[in-house]
Amino acid sequence: MASTANTLQSGWPRRTKPLPSQPFTPTRDFVERLTSYDQWLRVRWGYEEGRWRIERKVAPTRPMPPDPHITVDDWKCFQDGCCLIMKLLPNQLDGRVFYTLFEGDMHRRGGADAVANELDDDYVTRARNQRQSWGEYVEHQAREAYRYMNRPRVIPESQRHTAPKGGMSIGGGW
Image (cartoon, rainbow, N blue to C red; front, side):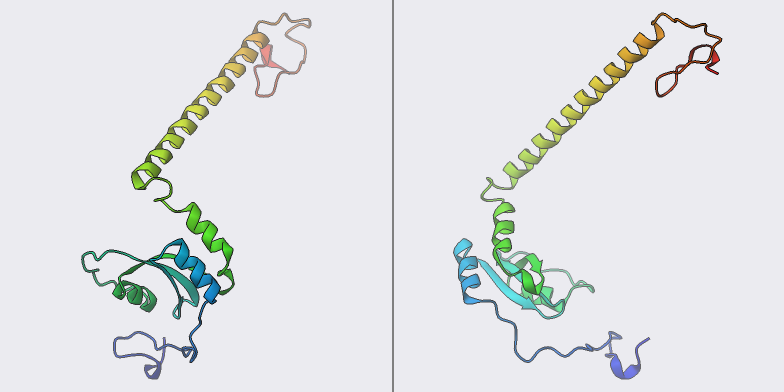
């Protein structure tokens, strides 16, 4: 339990690490590439989590309900009319960001409905292929079992003999 000197009146613990006096700033080259990709994107340093935040300006929506678990960085993002796109470690502010943005860009892929349809089609195709593969496996096992059961025996059933993996030993086996 934190001492009373280190807690606020609300009961929340005080910040133990002071905020840096000089805010982190991304390179000008990175900011130019980011805004040339999408003019509504921005990058800023999140002090509470110690990570870069890529945020996008969005159209105003209904007010956000109070959330006791919201961070100061999220609140600042909301107050500026933005939504969080991704969080990055301090050393990740490079070309990987643009690859991730490009791959996750739903507008480039035709919008949310097109992406949902694509995911549904992939799911149906995968399920169909799995059913077909399972059917082929069962058919193969059934053929092997049939061949084994109908194979002429060259040794008496009372003698010890081996069976395929999984059993089907005739006449007790041992």
